[in-house]
Image 1 (tube, helix red, strand yellow):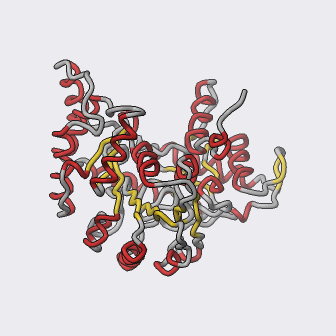
Image 2 (tube, helix red, strand yellow):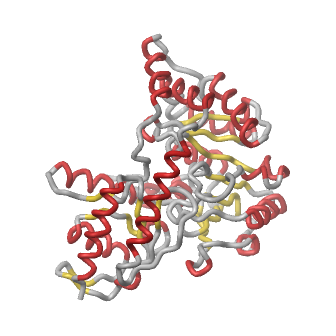
Image 3 (cartoon, one colour):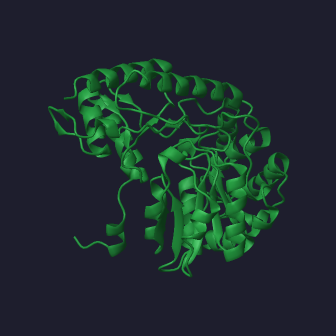
Length: 397
């Protein structure tokens, strides 16, 4: 069958593909440790669920404004004023069907054919494909693991051309857990202002941070960058609402209006009763997070400790999100009964078939020498997974 040319430019999401494969194996009765999931294993807080249930019972099941309920958008501006001291109005906000949808609508609204988008590596798997699907061209800013996957404003400026439209920054980073420092972010702001570039600021993991204090939204570091910044976030990670599909964007009203038009002709509004759950979440805030972060940190440390006893693996300590991103190039060139390991895709196959452990290949994130391992699962499963990996690696030739 004939398909559109644009579809040939993109690939299925590697993270969703690995997660689906692990779930299918479990459904067949195969005991698989799933390190691929990009969602917290905690339940959505009860008060959020009750708000949605109450909305359903009250018959709040009809369409809303495409960009989201007015009271929800106002709650979002109040939330950013309270937590970030940033001033936004309703017309500078839009709710979409998850953070992924928010990003897609951003690229639909700002990109013309051939426009370039600078994306640091390693990157979340969907950025390049979404840019390509919207007619743009991903331009990768290669970072080095020995530099902590960090980059400088000068590195970005070297990639700016007359076709550059935007820079994507994800901090904390999925997959690496890297958190960019204040000096780097201030430099990025200056480049964006100088060249009048959008910054697509993906802060979906902002609240999942293990350092001192807390992380801030980008305009905090330079208020002058606010007109150029498109803040993308949602409730999937901080409230464990991945299946609710609630994401948002804050930005210049012209971009938000364009995104609303795109959304009105595609999905219309986010699910109405889910919006009421989101309203409750924003009004109360993530009071549960300290306990979640404590558990995430313990799991992270368990993985890092376990890696020390496995030859051929090394890993930076992530400061945010809930992934480790170990370098496994020390296994390249080794053999097992399934063949020779030459890259991260081979490692993924080896671990799934030999160790019954599901991980995501780093090549999908632009880092072919790494794999992504989620620690959004029980300590028992983490310990089991480490043991299985160690045993399988011990049998490599």
